[in-house]
Picture: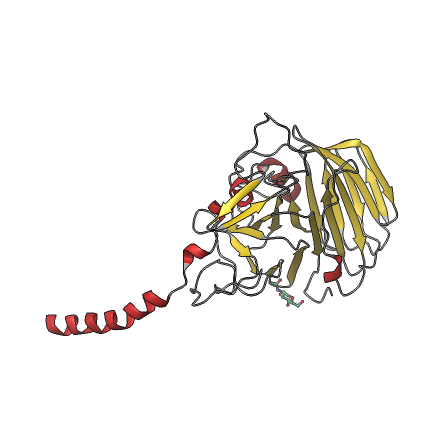
Length: 336
Ligand SMILES: *[C@@H]1O[C@H](CO)[C@@H](O)[C@H](O)[C@H]1NC(C)=O
């Protein structure tokens, strides 16, 4: 018996050894910890404290605009109503920015077709915005800043900034004697030096799919079909086109393709979100059935539910560009 076991062990070793030698050279690829912007966003534990300035709201047709502010900076929010039960959420630097941020418009097959909102009520604490086809309702809570998206059945299906992770680093001119975070103007990885002449300009925010336990997408990774819980387990999923020799299975490392699209699904309901950003992106994903969010109370108020509402959370973190999300509200993938 013992001899048999040894024989089997040797055989396994014979197969395992060459594999171990040929495996991906992990240290040639960045981890979140080795990437200053990813590390910073992932470390956010307290809400970043943005609120929407009610006196800054304006509305014209399919575009609803307002300012957001926290102790760090002021941002510009655009909500754009589009055809096919789609709404676009854009968060950018205000017009005073020293540089324009990149929007990957050439990646679109056509300019998204706008559809005027049919009803907009700007209240004292929140704004209620109804899409042109009356199938999508968006509620914007001012303080703390939160976007809630409802489908045609009045079900809350997605929220933006529920956990208060919104962070946008604006372009800057270096001031001598001022303290900046690690890797803010320059960072190194192996033999490569990355210069940032206008400073770190990363963006990130949390997106929660409410009443969804599972989500799919964010290709390409050699991992399970359903997105996993990366928080506390592994690196976030990385989107950064790479040629990886001997890639490992069940690993969130970047591969050959990057598609920043996520689809949450349950019986008879789907909601998709396109994170419209072409920069290097990391996404932490987590499925949970309690309202552990820092905005738990707001969340309970909106859903009317207790602690047992499932939600699938995705924390998007990009090196540059805008917070720019298209929500395809469904109720199914076909939109019908
Ligand atoms: C999905 O829709 C079908 C057809 O309307 C219905 O029979 C079924 O009960 C629904 N399933 C769930 C889980 O709601």
